[in-house]
Image (spheres, rainbow, N blue to C red):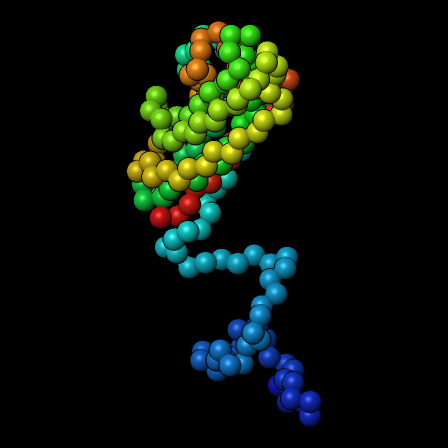
Length: 187
């Protein structure tokens, strides 16, 4: 097919990849690029790229009134492809609780654990509760972990009521769904 330069300034007959390197400069490109519906492949070794995503959910109520740490039942595992990569953990944990009439405060701690060790935690105190349940409380707990391994890693959430052993706390109160998303990020 012949290459034709039209009177409107357009060129026809050039196949994809048919122009020599360097013939198009940044000045020739539009100020914005619409990539809707397109896949962009970054060069090898480009950090920050999401390599894989794992998600898990758990919707069975787990109750505890011992005052000790307990597994909420929410966990997920991922196997990094390189020791230099990181894992971004995004947690949405649903909880409920009752004072049991012993006092009007609930102190709840949510931990993110792996291999029996706590990576991060958050605490929340609910005041002036009179033997009532806290319903529909949803906590976000996010962490960027550098595991330095290519072995499978399991992350889990652990709850604890630290005010009084007689207080009832529940993960996934009323069988609401808690979720965990793991994203492997190129190092």
